[in-house]
Image (cartoon, rainbow over all chains, first blue to last red; front, side, top):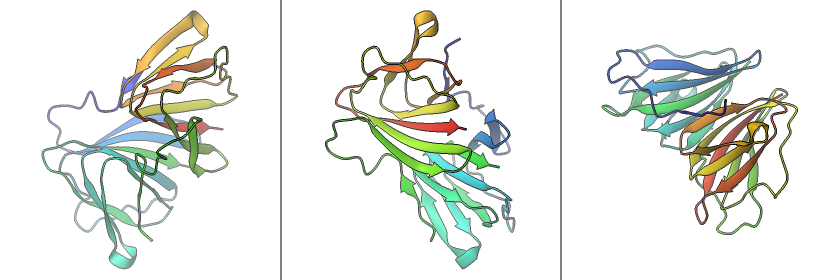
Length: 108
Length: 108
């Protein structure tokens, strides 16, 4: 069957927690859709992943913060970057009332 | 350095061939930006890859055709699909005069 799925569709009208959905998973890779609606990483928490993550924001707006140097960056649609393993980071802010849609590629 | 690159930017004003640009490459994965401006796979040619490819169209419009069953599908922004290894396919059409931007993830 030849069919495509749209990454901007099938988002619930209401959801409490940030949405994480696996689009593809293999031994080496995990492709994930993340939908944030004003969500941020809980205060004081940092992601500290043992693997590289390549991420692109496709819709909305977000601020990503790195612990090292206390640096932050605002992401707009189409912005992508690589978050190397063990780079402590957090999602500081996402646009309220709008779905920010991320595509994350975890590289194992 | 904390910086992001935008997948919709830095597209040449003019280009003759479809643009292929590596965004990330490792042993297991190759993340690529493809920009088509009315381009199609040359007549009679089919891609026949030895690896799976996950692809999402981010901007523009395109028609993808599979040899098996002579099936084709129109892709709009946000549409994604997996093209399994050795699935013969071609880009039949892309929107003229507009940049169709693809993100392709080749899984080795």
